[in-house]
Image: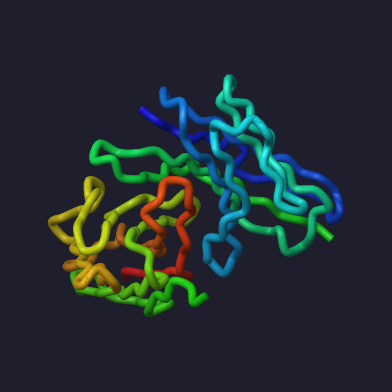
Length: 117
Length: 114
């Protein structure tokens, strides 16, 4: 079965510091897509960053970057220069195709990140 | 570009009552998802539409939940009758039917069943 595991239910970081959220997944596929979503208290799920498995280069989006280790099936998110607005739940998600060849997202349980002033 | 619209934002009902949620996806997005998110958990897919056809409803409790997407645009999710354990946030998302594109989410409807 394909699964996504986020082993850190809660984390905290001081403003302006760097924090890394971990995510591991299990799949037998060779080509797939990985995402990190952010869900602030307002509840709206927002895409932070995505990574195509066939790309060796780690994705970056401003202060957000990933460490994608395909062999280890690891996809961690690094947030640099943390800001108060980064306080949110962060979900790691893996996209695959289901039996009908339709896209399917598999979600981790999330990591609650608190950025402290 | 307008985002995914959902209504209502909040709903409180008594158990055994019925409730309906509405979602209007981003224009042109053929794929529409309904998720249930219980407090402290990740989203759980209830149903996925491709245009007006259902492509995955394996986790939809069909004895009480129903959903439709007439004309392949907006969608309605209904619960009848509601149970206490249905208390959750119901998220609607939409995407282009292309593999590497992300899903865009609405703000969700928080349902409380008392």
